[in-house]
Amino acid sequence: MRGLLLCSGGVLLFAGAALLGRYCQDLRLTARAQRQAKNWIDSTAAGRRSPEVQPPAPRRPAVRRGNPLDVLEIPRLRLSVMVFEGDDAGILKVGAGHLPGTALSPAKGNNGIAAHRDTFFRPLPAVHPNDMIAWRTPSGDTRFRVTKTEIVQPLDVSVLAQARGRDLTLVTWYPFSYIGHAPQRFIVYAQRLSD
Image 1 (cartoon, rainbow, N blue to C red):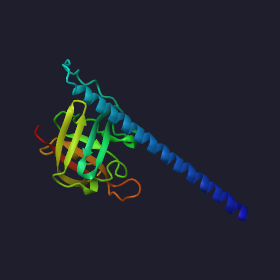
Image 2 (tube, rainbow, N blue to C red):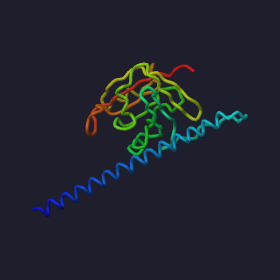
Image 3 (cartoon, rainbow, N blue to C red):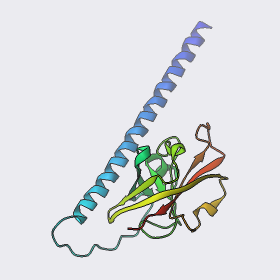
C-alpha cells in the first residue's frame, strides 16, 4: 500500500511539474508574440513619421490569419494587447483576435475584437461608459469612447452588426469567474471619436 501511495505521489508531482512547465512555455510564447508584434507596429509607425519626404504609403496587403494588425489600449484599465487577424484558439492564446467578417481598422464600420476573459481582457469588468480606447495602427492612431456594455448569449451575433455608436465591439466570455467554458458573452461597445 505504501509503495502505491509513493508511486501515485510521484506521478502527481511529475504531472504537476509538466503542467507548470507547459504553462510557463505558453507565457513565454505569448509574451514573445506580443513583443514582436508591438515592435513591428512601432517600427512601421516610426517610418511613417520620418521627416523626409516619402512616397505615398502602399495599400495594406491582404490580411491573413495570424497577421499582426494593431495595438488596442484602454489606458484607465492599463490594458494593452496586440490584435492579430483571426479568432481561433491559436490566435487568442497569444493576443486579441480581429473577428473575420467585421470591419478592418481603420475602416469605418463595426470592428470586432475578441480575447479571453482570463488573460488579455481580464480587466474588462471594470470598464465604464466614457472610458477611452486607443487603437494604434501603422497608419496612425484612432480613439474610441466606450458607450455601453451588455451580456448576451453566445449565438447572438447581432452585437457585431453595424449600428450607431458601434464602431468597435469587444467580445469576451462571461461570467469572468466561471470555471470552464463560460455560457455567455460580455460585450463592450465603443464609438469612434472625430479626428
